Amino acid sequence: MGVVIGETAEVGDGCLLYQGVTLGGTSQAHTKRHPTLGRNVTVGASAVVIGAIVIGDNARVGSGSVVVRDVPANATVVGIPAHVVAQDGKPVRVVPDRPQIEMPDPNADAINHLQRRLQALEARVAQVEREDGEETWSWVI
Image (cartoon, rainbow, N blue to C red; front, side, top):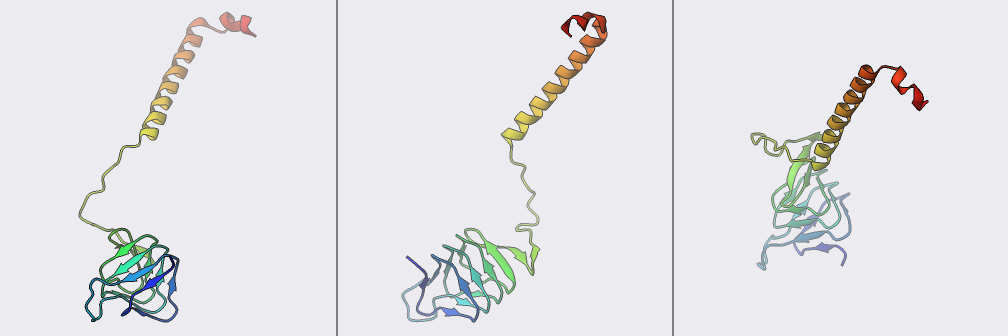
């Protein structure tokens, strides 16, 4: 439980480590094998930062992320493995040359079907009212 900080890890001034963070190593050798965090780095809950990597100043690591590569200063990383999603406060497209895939949305499909059905029924009711005229429906009132 708690935060795990490896033997050769370095944590800069003003860093914030939430619960369950691990700054872990990748070997048993007595060399630099744990991460180095720059100044004012925030590491979210249950995030894992592994290896002799450098997390730049003012970087943010999302909760539950697994960081295995260097993170530039002022970047935000998330995911497993972690990847940059924002740099200097601006969103970054992860893979710019890969097209975005449209995932099916069964709820939206069902709602669209119901809307089309409602429009068709309303049109049919309007047609029947025009054909029968006003006097035919007067007994309903």
